[in-house]
Image 1 (tube, rainbow, N blue to C red):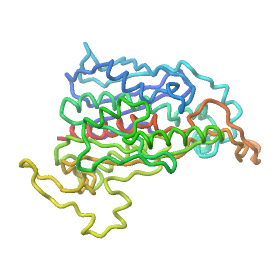
Image 2 (image 1 turned 30 degrees about the horizontal axis):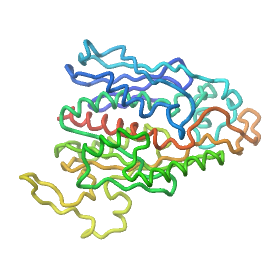
Image 3 (image 1 turned 90 degrees about the vertical axis):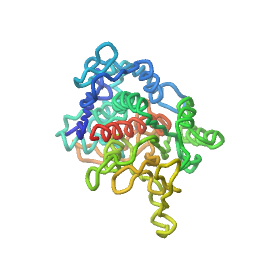
Length: 359
């Protein structure tokens, strides 16, 4: 099993949900880059559990400890390694599922892959808890990119059937990103946000869960980053986005709706703005032929409902090879979408940082 992503930079993520710690190693970051740990902590808190009524009650500080790669607050050229100690673990909550896989979790596939030895407490190494480590890497990259005039932000585009307004394809920018970062529940339309919260609360009362969509954008990128074919920007971003558990799909720009358009409707006409080649629209989502066009990169990712629900479900005992009824215990989010927003920003940041390193 590989938990290392490697291109121009390399990112390894390690640990288990209810183990002693989780963490990451980020290699290939240039030396001399200042990292503000307070800013990193603030970014981490946006996905930390236990802080919001719609989130899991599991309380973790998600305090990153940088144990290598920084000297006097600046990168030194060595791999950056950081850990987060798990302080509120309850592996006993999962004793009854050691041989009974939870529907829609990785329990069954992990059991088969590792011959029954996989740690399944809280999802083990397959848990969304490990996105905290991704956020350390992304938080570091976000600070470096900001100094280069590149900004990244996201919001909850939908929860269930409730939709937020989408980013303006040609007008999104850092001012809106800053507003969204300051929100507990990041949405463009507050009325839609209130209905989303109600949707989550209703699912929770029903002992169920609900999914949604996150929209993420990056602005300030120059044209020319990325490569055709296998090294395209869509490819790189998608690889990192799919490291976030529960992601089931991604689209860029107009995405799947482009399939319903004619070429005359979908094509983005070129123009010149302040002496710079731009496009009048942005159905291409900032990427043409795998290479950035200079327009905003915009993607949306579908997040499935949290698999752990209170309702009884059908499963099997993998030892006895017989059907059983399963009731899941533990602490779980009725909707992971709001806490996932910074995870998508982190994935985008690592991808963009990787492309800059190729220049």
